[in-house]
Image (cartoon, rainbow, N blue to C red; front, side, top):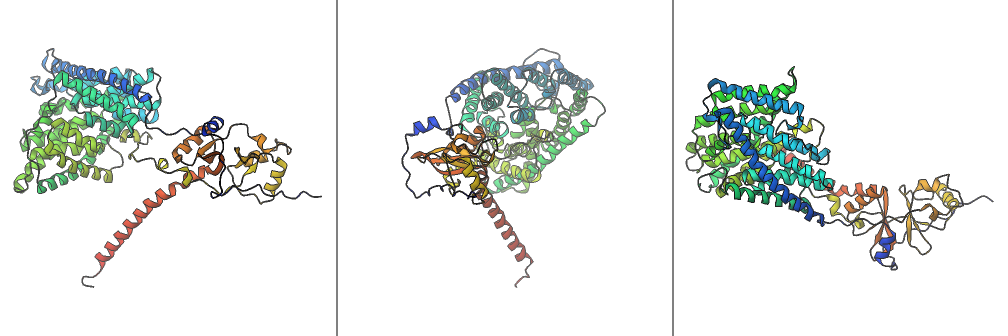
Length: 631
């Protein structure tokens, strides 16, 4: 008598059916593999926080040491004396010989990059971002020493850079080094890198809040307690040490100014938009110069010397462009420059800086961008004030908005730019203009430029840098809302011959990622795949339950899809059984990789609906515009 197809195995009970309560959850968890519950914090954060505080203490001292080293190099190179005082090279008496000083500095930096580490080239933040994204935040140990020394030489010999970039890179390298020496995870190493960078910036400028925000926007790519707390404590520690050593005064002291009226505020917002366009042009100019150096028929170790030659020539005609130029920024926001002086300083600083940075020497971007943007902003304020006498436009606030908007547009670290400008001037009347101006610069930059001055270099090397920091969508959706409940389950006591006949009959429901297997009591034993059932190496006489060697892998209905997805990755499976906590041995559904993908449908649908509404409104406006008047 021919074999007839066996009746299909029993279907999964519906959600309305009462589920008998199985043994306690602890017993089930001991017998089954369950996902780890997501937690904001654990005790490891305490360890990382202590390390961050110790790291910040070291970075604060390194910042003072780097400032002193820049002072020594500057005094020796331009004045022939030994002093740690941070002095402007503008008062030198070298005459034409001043042209050669940056060239010598460029030769030394080029040799250090060639025979030490090429990673010291540039301002350091893109390189740190690359290590965070691709190399688990591992920065070579030698960068901790080579970066500050090379930067001190480049800046001290007249390089038009600020000390903030090198100390940020140095602090990050030191944090990475500590994370490599100690037994920490990649995420903790990234946190230490960001903590060192934030501590370095806070130690130079006394700007703890903006240092934390900059670390979030450019290095952490996340805003979570596990990383925010150590970084914030590091910035606090570094700033406290700076206060104790040099005082708590504003780095760029600014006289009291009046709060802006509506007319002035509109002007500052428009100024921010203008600086947004300028920041796009400046960013493109930097990389155009860098591309030009790439086409030179000489080794790159000689490029900093050529950049130094340009710095020296510009510095001969415009001495204020030499060195860090922090006093120039203070003069801009204090109204200390006339219109023609601002125009000359801004143009010459841009020319000197863009060539020097494009040559691959070691230095920062923040101070030069602040100088260029501040000069442009102050110029706009000086021109607009007499044209709009009743608006109450203050050229000093215009300069403040200009410098912050320039950095916000070029780097897109918009919140860091706003808070930094406030922390370094301690001018509350500038907060609202800064918010409006930097936001407009950020808007223009996002519309006109795909990458930023920080990301263009590594994007060209194929590194994708996150540009948005949104909540994890899968973490907001529960398993019970996405799992499949219309399932067919198998009996552990069934033999494979019966199941194979049933599969061959065509009556089997296609559950490609597996069939849940229950014992005689209806308790979950595990999931068996279709491939296992049809594997010819398994004899027909074997029972389905014999194919299950491990404990069942389960998730609970109230787990998030993120927890479930991580659990599936860790277990290397494509589907997982869903159970209720009230009856943890009774399966109520199945979650597959396809369900995880499907969960994004709502998110995409919401985005598409918004785009559709925008297109409809645009079409209506276009139709009304073309409609004859009075029709």
